[in-house]
Length: 370
Image (cartoon, rainbow, N blue to C red; front, side):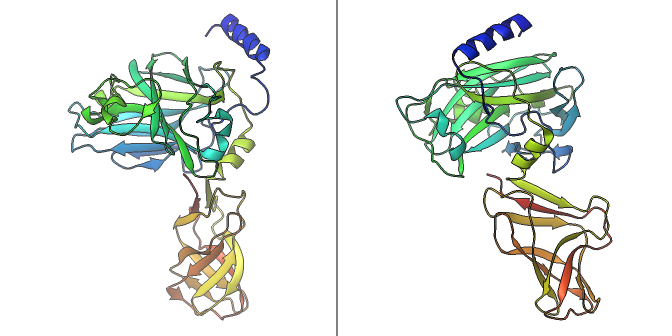
């Protein structure tokens, strides 16, 4: 978009009173926050990558493609410093019917009530993003989880950065639940077999039942060559039919919004960093309250990697071989259990420290993703 065209659209937006306040529904649209890491290898595993963005790999066979996903530095798109980069490492030229590769962003129903979906006043909404890479055609699917409905549009990628703008009509059928559960997905289709691409691209709102073959019809395949790559950043979703300039938020704001869904506690090089202080409840178990940086979307699940310990502060005894679990859930202050299988016995009733055991790379993940 030229500067003159962008200014013209800004005038239209101001006239229609669309701009102002918090416009972008998407969190981490500038790809700045990467708590889980900055580089990932994908073959057949579904997983979150950069914060709030999920990779879904469906079906496939022994010839299915593989790629790396990285948080790449951006130097050729003014205003942006990070992008998500897909780089194919294993090509797939024999596509099985059930194969699919999606980049997915999931949204809570309570964050979408301004769309007025399912009413006679349903609002149009506009999704915009910047892409570059190997020239291909891909698709963006809007998937209504609550009402089993969907809408699609295709978009093109070129070797230079281009802002894609896609406006979707309001849907007068099917209100979105007003809660903190998954209601709407944005699915970017980058690869698909005939199960998903064997029909005609579905346009406009319609039921998603029995229409899989229309979901990705006509798209290219990211996997078709190891020369293929794709960059994406600046994802924005807003009410209205005009794409306003990307709403930049500070890194601190984006991090706090992301930590409502996922928080990674890590030692950051401090080999004996403590997650929490608590008490010994037996000779091998200690329990304490962990203070999270944000109130999470829901009670989190917990997973960990690394080496941990319990220190009974009265006796100085140390227990090792730790299993970490949540004894009682809380969206801000979960009760944590550290259960041990080795070391000196603890003394029930004594205060305990619970954390890393001479390990600079220990992590504990709290996950409340949709």
